[in-house]
Image 1 (tube, rainbow, N blue to C red):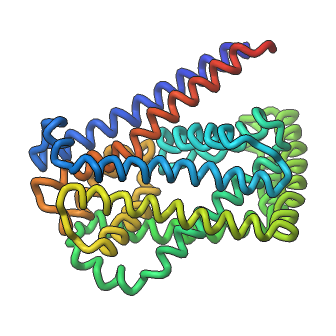
Image 2 (cartoon, one colour):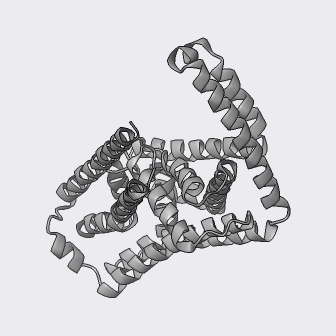
Image 3 (cartoon, helix red, strand yellow):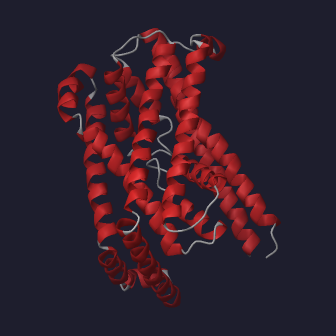
Length: 353
């Protein structure tokens, strides 16, 4: 029965990966049709090799920093996790976030699971580690965005966005702020969220779907996780302030690497558009794409980049830029994260029960 469950999980992963890649191929083909860029070799040759290598290093360095932030927070809770294990958790989480809708629905739960299973961390502590890392990342993104509100207001009209893209952008901003507000509330008042869940579990319709004994076990486990989470949170924000401050700094570094990657790629194509405008346009894209319902935003994101950067990149080169940027920042993590995920499955299979 256990093996059958693992098989089903693998089938689900393969199916979701297939959908994400299929959506991406559709998006890339659509971009290619519009911009008349079909020859992949010619596309790659359009770039200066040194800039292409530099952009790849920025992407790889971002992965390293993301894993390092995870290690910083885990060490603050006195869990000595090897950096390679943190990188493993990041890659698997990144993979799941790119094959699930809304660019991240499955990443954090899988990271919590891996931390607690592979590194013998209490579920409440692993939840605290991932939750605080998510909090820091969201706070960093909102802070960067909040520094440039007037610039966005002044420059958004110059991008000549369609009504649909403008609505998507505004929805992304509003939903991110609402999510962040709820997330802060969940971190500061987890007992209230726990009470909401307990009340929901008593609803008649839910008890018809899930057996009463299973609900009671789940509630008991949730209380333990919330209790451990509160202890871990209090410890991090009281005695480990320096570690948290360092994690914030490294998160800003990570976002800097992400936002400067398109600048380097455009310079590699010989495009001299002002780098601040490229950075803010990239930031707008990441806000909007986080709420696209396709797996990891695949397919739709390519079209979104095309619309946002149309005023910055000449028509013959924009298709080249869109496809290479997405390969670097999205599909490379699907591939490497997928390989890492399969390795994790293989390890579990080879271990004795």
